[in-house]
Each structure stands twice: as structure tokens, then as C-alpha cells.
Image 1: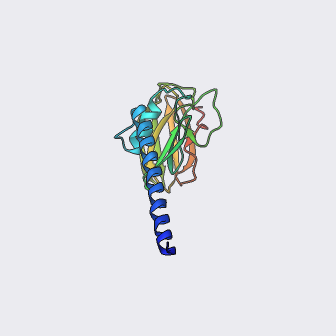
Image 2 (image 1 turned 45 degrees about the vertical axis):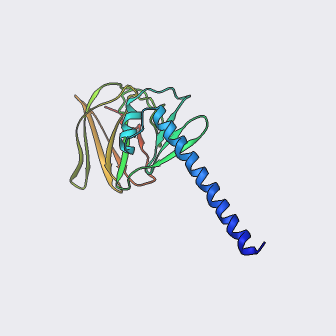
Image 3 (image 1 turned 90 degrees about the horizontal axis):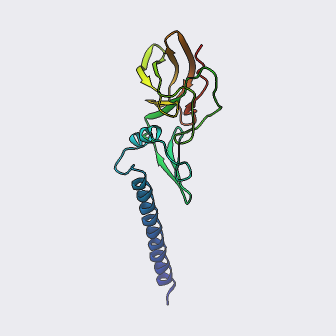
Length: 183
């Protein structure tokens, strides 16, 4: 047998193995998405759905950083890229208790003030990036989508209580803000 034939067979065999692995990964990803009601959703919809859902963290752990949504099962970690121009910031205003956090865990992070309304303003150099009334979820957090690669200030208020913090929305910026103490 000629070397060219051997290399040709190795190339075909290698491509076949890679195709099988990718097909298995795609089926596995699809299975995880379907099992948790995420199939057919955009990444942003998945993030919001997971933030609003109470899941058994032994079955699925979901976290979001500045670039990806991570779905972690007992068997695998699935990494799904967030659109380049979007950044998800989840924040938990508090009065008494908080916890340190940088990468928001959509399924296990717990804030103090659950199902409470807040007025929120996010501004950058006089430009309003977000403004509205939001209500924290059962986990005490509320997430908002912002433009990527910005430096801004978030203002949160509830009645006479208010808090502010400087935020950034870069790929390596924190997605979990737990330092908004309402005073």
C-alpha cells in the first residue's frame, strides 16, 4: 500500500471520528436543552428563563459570565456564547445580608430581597442605558441586558432607600452585583 493511500485513509478516518464526536455533542446539548425547557430559545431567553426558574442544582447548574452561558450537568459542561454586543448583569439589592460574587450563578445565587419592586437607572456619560421599574425574582436578583464594552453607573431605589455602584460591561466584567446596599 502506498503512503498516500495510508494518509488518505487516516484523513478520512480522522474526519469521520471528529464528525461522530460533534454529532454526539450536538445531541447531548440538544438533550440538555430539551430536558430543561430551553430548546428553541435564544441565549438571552435561556438566561432570563433560568434566572426566573427554581431548579434542582444537583440536576443543572447554570452560570453566566461576560461571554458565555454555562450549563453544567453531572456529565458535562455546555458553553453557549452570548451575542457579542450584549452583556447580562444580575443584581441583588439588599439591606442586611449579601454574599460576595463575580460570576452570576442563575440557579444557586440567592439575594435577600425577593419579589420586591425597584426603580433602576443605568447611565453612562449622560446616556441612559436602562431605566425602569423591575421586580426581583424568587432568588432576590434581577437581571438586565446592557450594551457590551461600557462603563456606567447603576442607581437602584425603593422608596427612601437607594444605592449606586460603578459597573463595567466588558467580557471579563462581573455579571453578579451584590454590593447594592440600600440605605
